[in-house]
Structure formats: structure tokens, C-alpha cells
Image (cartoon, rainbow, N blue to C red; front, side, top):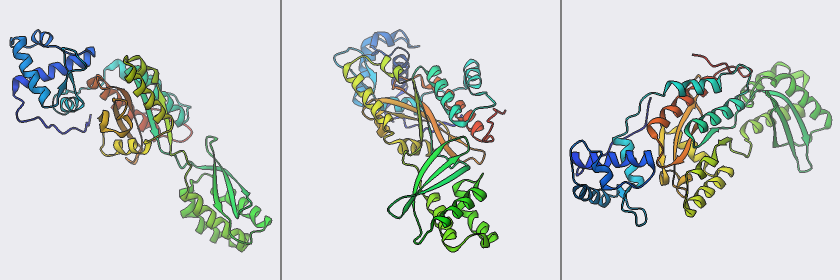
Length: 364
């Protein structure tokens, strides 16, 4: 499984310090509580007194790798410490067989549209991780089923575009001057006759040849409407910025206790609902193939909530990134388990996205 990591262990971290640091982080991830020196002394292979362990922990704290929450005698890893652990210590294996089967069963269906597939993917991720999950998909340029053009009063028109699958988009464009109602009708009929089954992007490149082939069927005004309208519509985009599906947000509340932590998670909810920084999150996933992990302030979206994001892009049959999916949870996520789940789900969704529009049968 490709994982974007860059080991960067401090030169001053000797073997004993590394062992104590690794065990402290692993214990924190497993239990979620501050870890004390007595707990660590029972875990080390080589006997070491709690006092000696406390000395090492003080050094780790000075390096900014661990910290004491409030007045607790134990320590927890900082965001910097967790990054060091992920990059230098974490061993990531394959997805567990039962988790593989759960994802395959959730996604294997012959007759679902891609939106349903994405919804099932988020539900499966949330259930398996017991955290929140998200899927990001850019607005798709789906094949056109039907177009209606409604003139407005300001020299513009609204194109009502029905795409395959029944989705409806409304887009505004400028009308060429001097357009008559009959030319509008001729242009609309031409669009429906020649653009059905094409995306707007495909229509922009194909429209000139199609007009040339039937030039006698269109007057000058109708031809101008078709050419300028398709060019504008293909360059426009809906205002929502893409599709965002989130599941399992209540799991985040269940993992928090302090009032300030709950308030931070609520701020995250608001950001997700407004799709704030959605493009940035997708951009982070697109920076490298495979699973990426962002801890707290490493991602602008999660800087206030102190959450972690495990995310992977998914690709179509041309190896183009078309979206991303992942898990949002507390920074003490079981990364070794979650990362293979996210990776496998992304690869399965990529296979489904690469299927035909009508059927997305899971292959391989």
C-alpha cells in the first residue's frame, strides 16, 4: 500500500528514547489516556526504573514530542510527536480479511448509480472505523439527456440541463443579439438532436463539425446561439464546488469529553456543512498517490478541532484522480488499521467509477 511518509528522526533520539517514545504513543493510541512512567516500565523489554523513564520523558518533552495535558502525571504525544511516530515507527500491513469482505459486500451491487456507491463507501468507512468518514467527488460533467433554454430579461438565458441519471443543473449564459423566438427554438432543437449522450466538454469540441454538417438547417442567429451557448456552458460550473458526503459525525462527539473539545468538533461540523476548504482537502489528497495522513493543524480544515484525517484519492480507468475519500477522527486513531481500510476502499471505488454509467459492477 503506497503511503506518503518521510522519516525524520532527531539525531539526539537514541535507541532507549525511541523505544520509550514508541511505546508511549502506542499505549496512548490504544487507550486514549496519558501514559505514565510506571506504565512504561512494565512494558519495556529491558528493565528500567520509573525515575530513569521520567528523565527520558523530560527530554522528549523538551523536543516537543510529548506533553502533559493539564496537571496529569502522564504524557501524551503532541501533533509533532504523532507525525514523527507515523513517519518513523508505524508499521502498516494489509487490510484484515473480514474488513475486506465488509467493504466488498457494501459496494458490490450491479444496479446503482455512482452517487449511491459513494454513499455506501462513506457508510462502510464510518462503520468500520467508528469515526466520521467523507467522500469528495468533483462535479462530474455527465452525458446530456435533454436541454431547455429559457430567455431572461437582461440579455441572458438559463439553460436547464438534464443529465443521464436524472440530475438537473441550471446554468446562465449570454444570448447573442437579435435572437428571435424561432431561432431560439431551432437552436434548442439542434442541441437536443446533436448533443444527447455527450458531455458539455465533448460538445464544445464537436459542435463546430456538427454545425458544418447541417449548416443549411440553422439560420445565422440560431448558429450563433449554439456556438456561443455551448462554449459558455462548457466553461461554467455549478456553484456547489462538488459533492461532499459525510457519515458518522456523531462518532466524533462520542470520542470527546471536555467542553472545549466538543466545541471544536462542532466547529468542524460547521466547516463541513459549508464545504469550507473542500478544494484544499481534495488538493491535499491529490498531492501524492496513496494514503495520506494529516494531523491537526497540518490541514487548515482540522486546525481548530484537533482531528486527524486519513485520506486517499481514487482514480478512474485512465489513472486520473477524480475524487478522494477518508476518515476523520481523534488524533489517537489506530492508524495501522485505518490506513489499509481507506486504501482498499479508495481502490474499490476507483474500479466502480471506471465502470459504465448504467452499471458499476465490481470487478476483480
